Length: 404
Image (cartoon, rainbow, N blue to C red):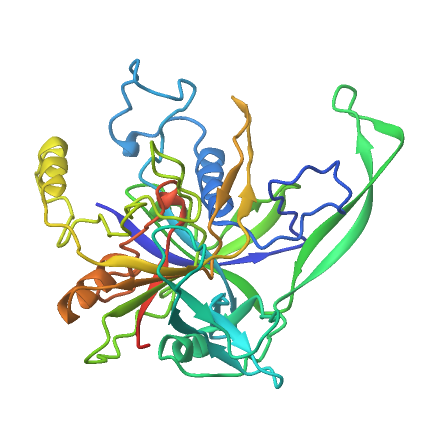
């Protein structure tokens, strides 16, 4: 049985959060990035292994390794862990990435862009519509907006963001260490950026796992190591994640549904499908949504092979992707103590928006339930629409009905 919990994570000091860019580049340090979903996931896994380095009796059966295992050195412990977040939280307010289909006027008021038909353009397939801004030229958007402002965005309303101060960027000078001797290297200095949270700012996340989380909570609050320089964070349980739900405006004659990412999403190239900004579950030529229509959850006692075959033959959506506004790709990588450097991935960033045209109003509702992070209702994360790293919190989105 999966145990789901929500947490607030509060750093005790600075955090050093790297992205995929090399430290040797001309930029300074590049460590003041908001933590990615996979970094939160890794912090939980590392906490589990630090707390219980040896196999515990309550973990159940061990994984039987075979030739099909891609990672021979993995222990396969705590494999059911799933996380979502982190999102900035300050006081009782939670903040989400600013949608990229917003534009600002001269007074700083933010408006949802209008959808217009794109004729005689070189837009990539399968797009047929484009976004039109209320103001010509480049718009400076805030990085985060409050959940209250996000609700206005979902309703298609204009608003003025309060630009809450959530954290600062600090730069420090350090001395390079020779890994062979453990001593400083003469004449080698470096400059690094660090993230310092403002008072009352925390990271809001949710996590679920069949085992482990409940054992950690037996101790009440617990500490967690996070980031590239062993930053210590305090983790405390809260009632729920408090993310906005999808907005059903019931616009009677609009068949357009918008899906906005609140976490990055990774779509690799698979065969003839280009991936990148285009979700793997969308036909790259026609734009049709290839997701099964209906309840795809595995039934109690249902064998995996039977479940997969049942889902494979389920009716598919007729909805098609018609427009997308995508930000600069998020590059990230990592390091594994056993296998070394991890590959670099490019993710569609949080805030990216996708527009679908549905067959009828019923399909608008069904597609919203299939794409929204919490399905139709509730506070539990149900849909993770990233091809890779969904269990780590990639591919979360919120839907809203729009009219053109």
